[in-house]
Image (cartoon, rainbow, N blue to C red; front, side, top):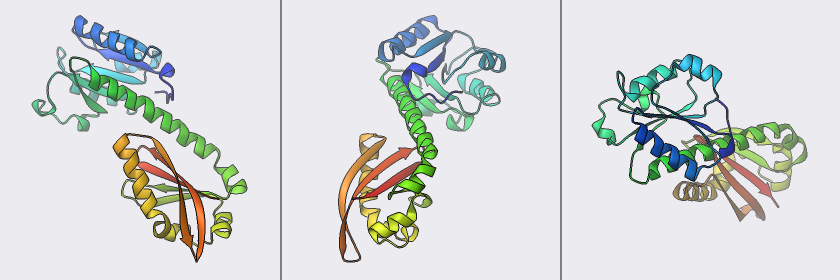
Length: 242
């Protein structure tokens, strides 16, 4: 699977044995994502040979299919490709399906509604997620430069709000701000701002936010530009003193 960051790079495979439903989904994708390549099939292909010959980023598969249901087909898919986005789509509610959707390997569950708004929302999330992954890759690429030339640091915080990594020029940051140990003291100075920015990201479904704050460090008031980026289950807190 490619890690595309733009909708123009995405290839979506839609599988539904009902040609009418298949055509409707294809029209919805073409209308809302005109640059996305859509492949429509009425039968599930042999995953091994198909994915070797065709780049696919997202698979949308109907639950009610002949012989096997969509969940069983996703289980087969995961034996070949563990990373491709695979969505189960159905008019049924989640509690009407007696198998655990996510444990089967499905990325998520899409409810068929009249406007297909749920489908549009899920695909928008995929595009956003791929964009964030690209930003994360770029951050890694620039890590050596950051260590040498800048006075800001990047704190990687997991979903439990635990600090798991620090990058950037820590010594220069220390000399500029007077914060002697950012690893042990980050919550002392930046927890309130972090919590506020995290809430803003989650409430507004954004991938990043920025805020300028003034913080007192050892009787000295220092202005910081603080940028919070969400990527998968982690947050990146970027601290830049002015």
